[in-house]
Amino acid sequence: MDEKIEENLKKTSTWKRIFFMLIFAAIGGLVRMLIWAVILLQIASVLFTGSPNENVLKFGSNLSLYTYHIINFLTFNSEILPYPFSEWEMTVETKLPEPKPRKRPKQ
Picture 1 (cartoon, helix red, strand yellow):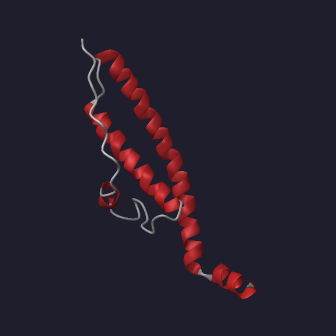
Picture 2 (picture 1 turned 90 degrees about the vertical axis):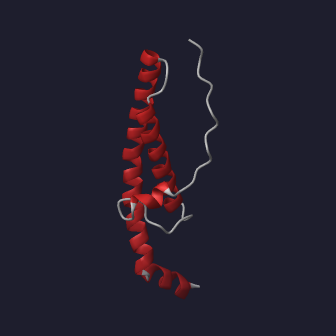
């Protein structure tokens, strides 16, 4: 049993993954701040124009996918490093459930 633990502790791949996990935990914190900015921008857009901003919707969707990719890596559900250590397309190809169509309020 002790030999197995010692073997696991000596694996460079394990320590490399832990290093990347720490990096992506920090990046995840920055992304959460950006998500709050998106939330506030969308609130302002709805208050002033009556509808969400389409460009901010796309940006928010990309942030959601990126967050999902990071969380999958951090929870060992994926071995693929998120962007910037892999191509952005790897994140974009991650599929989330399609949102239901929204009913626009009548004006």
